[in-house]
Picture 1 (cartoon, helix red, strand yellow):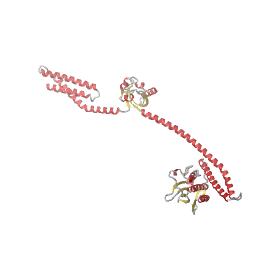
Picture 2 (cartoon, one colour):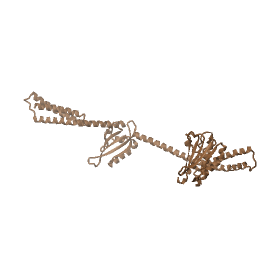
Picture 3 (spheres, helix red, strand yellow):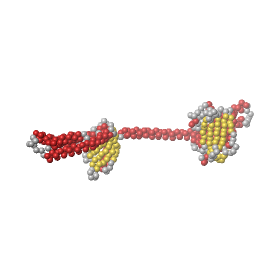
Picture 4 (tube, helix red, strand yellow):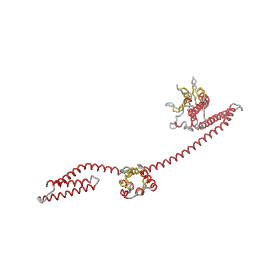
Length: 476
């Protein structure tokens, strides 16, 4: 019996120690404290019995059955606690890991008892995000409503109540006032928990997420979008005004060009009469002066024609008179017209007309104008030689090339070469307003063709303009 008492006493003391250590791992501290106290009291009782047996072995009789039961209880308690320790340790580690993950987050986990309308749980992030400690949320009645932004207080509360009555999970966005007076935007994601019978809502559980930075970014984006819309509206009105001014400019050019054609035609007629001797013989010096006047009058006439053509193109009043023609005819006509002008400028035109007809559908006057403008440009820029080549590409297009031995076109200027009022640098551009090549491009495109310019490869010197015209622009 003494051995049984000694073993029982040792086991009860060990069980009490283990119960105290279980407080480290278990969540319910009070239960494990009570178990440890009970085991210690049992150990004290065993100690008294054990001491009596040692001091008066014959005078004290122990209850063998009770001691055996106590021994069994101690063994079972120790065994149970040894088996529980790993599980409780894992639970504690998981709980610590969860806390470490949740604490830095910008959200608050909460629970509200609908019977009292008070918080029963609030995670520690509440104090970090809003400044109020979690126990204040739980202790203070109507904490949520009292610390909501005044403008959101009524509608947010009513919305939550209405959704809860419908037993529907919901989320909404509102503002709360932090302890330091800051306005914090909250997205509240709410779950409705029903009672045990599943009939009525009993709890609300949810997550309050701090979305203040997102809302500020949205406000900045909205402000920027508003500014962009205002700028876009301003640019739209400015563009409309520019279009209106452009139309007025085109109409003005058309009017001026049209008004100038009549006096220029009269001047040309008078000069022609004077130069042919209709009005009487002229001295040699007078004839030279008349020739100068005639050349400048011709230049002015071409300028006015270009201005009138450009105003018609821009105003949409431009149309082609398409008919079957031999392309050699308008090219030859332009070459013959400008050959004398080129000779007076010290330029040599080289053109060998193809033997076979090059039949196509085109506007003869406009094709003549294309060639004339290209030749006029080359006369002004060439050093001496100008070469005209006309051929077919073996397919559905004809190719016209006008080459001159002038200076290269700067690469920076090449993309703007066919723009209106674009002029190349240098003295050769004097007297040129930059409409000739722009009209060439417009007339070529009207025939469904293409025009481009390129510097001739070294060792050649000069520039080549290439015009590709389809045999029938209606099929392109």
